[in-house]
Every structure is written in structure tokens, then in C-alpha cells.
Image (cartoon, rainbow over all chains, first blue to last red):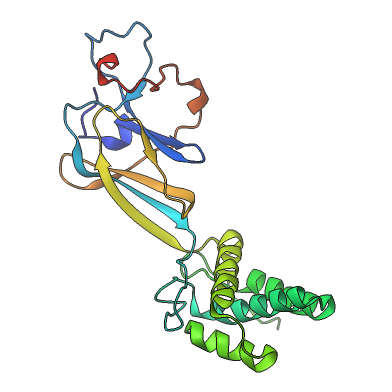
Length: 131
Length: 101
């Protein structure tokens, strides 16, 4: 089975909705398997401590105390905090049956959330004034 | 902004609301923003288990950006995503390690 000398060559991953699958190339020549293919389950004879690391888009943390901060506890960018207020107002107006005001705050929430620039990395465009 | 500041703003408009109700609405807002913006990234490390193909994903995972394996020099190296996993022939459904050779 594949060793971990060149993981980018000998390992691959995929996922379904609930699970992440790690595959490794099958390099053994004396395998007892009848079906031959490039990838199989990782087999090195022992577990590798902290051997797997994955990075993912995550949901925010949950708030369950008044003292908790939306940035430090939940991870929400501070610029998006006013949108939470809009969302909460929209939901309360919905529950009260005032759909007109609910719609107003819902639209404000959706517009501001959509437009809020979050990228701190990546290519930025220069705004060149028309001369 | 703390949860209390949001609750204070709402209280000015609607009067006092049950605390649990407010937390529920705030958390609903966070879930809704997470589904549209997807900018909050996290990294998790776990053991690479011998003869184990599948690793359960936490409920907080929306989508996976990258996966890395600890190489023999103790550095994490990014591995490619398989484009055609449906073509994998050998399954890994049997819980017995003896079936893997």
C-alpha cells in the first residue's frame, strides 16, 4: 500500500453528504485482491496520529448567552452584525403578522448580505476614474 | 456586537421578548448567512486510521475546500480530489479488517 512520502501522488479524497473518503494507491504486487484498480482504502499497518487535516466552509457557532459576541463566539464578521438585527426584526414582524414591515426588513437583510464584501484575499479590482 | 446589544435594539422596537426566542432567531440568522456567504472557514485535524476509508463529517461542515495528509516528513501535503469516485470498484462496506489485503 501507498506510503506517505508523496501524499499528493498516492492519496485522493472525495465525499458524500455525511462522510469524507480517503483513498490510497494500491502498490502491492502480492495483493490477494482479485479486482485490480489504482485506489483502495489506506493501509499502512498503523494509524497516523493527526494524519488527516481538512479545511471547510463552516456554519457559524451558536449563541446561547447574552454576553456572547457574534464575532468571537460565532465567527461572524463584524460588518455582518447589522444584518442579524434586520433578520431578527423581519422574523418578529412575520410572527406578529405584519408582512409589509417584515418584507421591508427581509429585503434590507438580503440586499446587504448579498452586497457585503468579505474577501480579504484574492485579486482586487482597481477603481480607475474615467478621465 | 454581543447578543445583548442585538436584544436591546429589538426590545426598543418590540418590547421585551423571551430570551430563548431571541437566541433562536439570532442562530437562525447565522445559519441563513452561512448558507449564502460561505466565508467562514475552519480546519480540523484527525487521525488517519489504518484500513478505514470513511470519516464522518461534523454537522457544521458546508463544503470541503481542501484535504491534506501528514507526510513522512511531518508536513501536511494537499491531496487531489477524485473526480470520478463512482468508478471505484472496491467497496469498503465490510467492517472486518480481514477482508482488506
